[in-house]
Image (cartoon, rainbow over all chains, first blue to last red; front, top):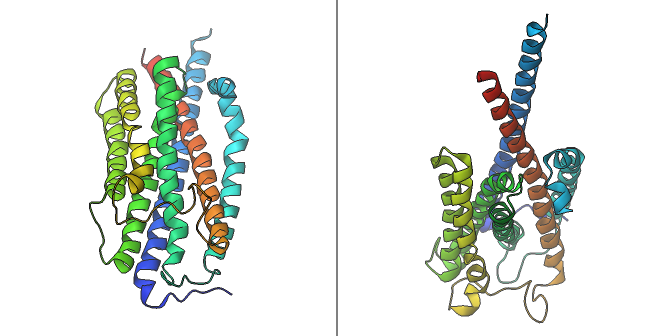
Length: 58
Length: 238
């Protein structure tokens, strides 16, 4: 049976879980966004390089 | 295996499927662990605050485990000059700092109702605070030096020196009189914690470790792409 009523300790218990969720959420979002950003940047630069190569060929 | 994964292309191929797979395992373990955390009976002494143990203790384990990984990556970077070692160190530090912050904050929120104080300068808490400062110092040093090779070398030396703090954290409760209670899981003679509490704790601890493993791989991938992007940008400029 789920016990979601911590009584007088709720003022300490829920902030601990909320802060944990926030920090872990930040870790996940920051990691994924950073990976996505650099992957896109590599794709953009590689596309740019192949455009330049194509343009320089007679 | 480490030798094989030190090759960036092999690591990228491996982590493409391993990072999401380990991430899914982490989500399952943490979900079940959280559910069990609110099913176990309240402790006769701690009351409902016992449920905080299931997020505080895994965060504290991970704070130390991440630093051991950071130390390992720093050693590999300094001694063997593995191409991925510096990336692994850079990727590890923010995650370790996050877990250390969580260990301190959840410990403080547990300490207030149980010990009657948010904070005490006892050996365990102070040494964990030093661990957080080491993570911050590592990241600050990486950011402060423009030359990435020099930055990685300086930060790696700091990380290796900081390894001395890990046994201090672990044994602080044995070496000194502390407000923090002694070890109740990894101790001679086996765990003193009741089995009812060991299961959710074990699931949460393994779940946190899987989460770290998955995010670490994602962040190392990000570092590999960042270096590749910098190289391509230099080529384009030249």
